[in-house]
Length: 198
Image (cartoon, rainbow, N blue to C red; front, side, top):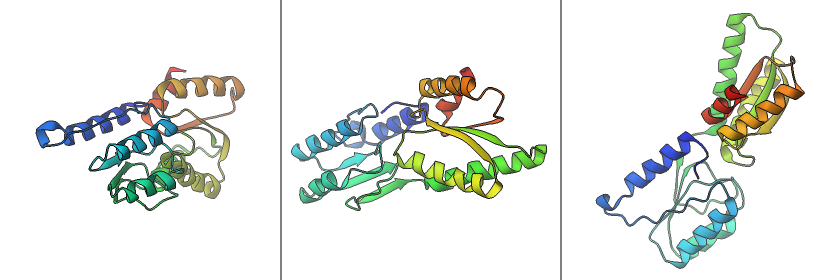
């Protein structure tokens, strides 16, 4: 997809690595953040009998059947960035532990509020694409701090990792929670840019 500047950079990195100059014939499909399109594309690649399939999974579940089909066709699958939770039928995963990212955000906010002497922490969260491993891990990690620190999380809604989504959620938050919040947590940069615009 192309929902954020980070995703565009990641996609361009893959295209550069698998370039014709590097000896590859890359077939690329932009699934525009649609997991059904992503699974259909993988099935098309299986039918074409490609040598490898590289997936950046939009959501963490719904993969077992299509990955079994790839395994049956003896096509290695490489998963990048996000992870898959309902299947182990892939050759390799290259990414980060999303839970640690949520924990890091919580640790930063704890240090910041302590340094500023802020005791009353009222948080609005703009999360990533619901069901993606990035959203799940970042939410779970951050929520550990919400619970342990006794912070008040007023709401969490998805901005789908987009600037437009972050802006729309923040505009809604500004109306619904006017004067009630002092922290906004966004799960990627583009959502934060949208929240700032709002």
